Length: 178
Image (cartoon, helix red, strand yellow):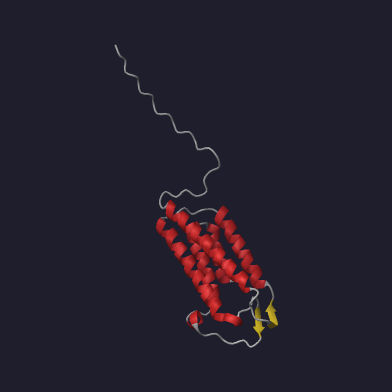
């Protein structure tokens, strides 16, 4: 007669090949990828806007702190990028936290750019006394004391929510203090 084949016991899964994945959320992977692209685009737009504005700033009569702000900003962005890529992950990401982080990042970008545009010719890349400088009290300056810094910190908070690394949250705390 015909013999029925005996079922083979299940074989254990072999371990995945290659380097371990740094981020493996169980939920919201598509939302996380979308949020990552949104955050990266926001930071690229921020850099483009500030680099484009370096040539159009007002001439300084007396520079109080030369290069400090630009150097600090470059350091913070570079450190943030490194921590987002290589930092220890908290692994709490959901589609909601990724979307919230992306929204906060875009809102921070909007506030920073709005404040920079509102300053117009009063903006200077350094903390400085500027020729024919006027106090700006319109736009975001009517509601927030330092809207450019507030927007920048908002971008950092949103980025930390999307990438969820311990180092990014620590960097946001350092940035808020200094």
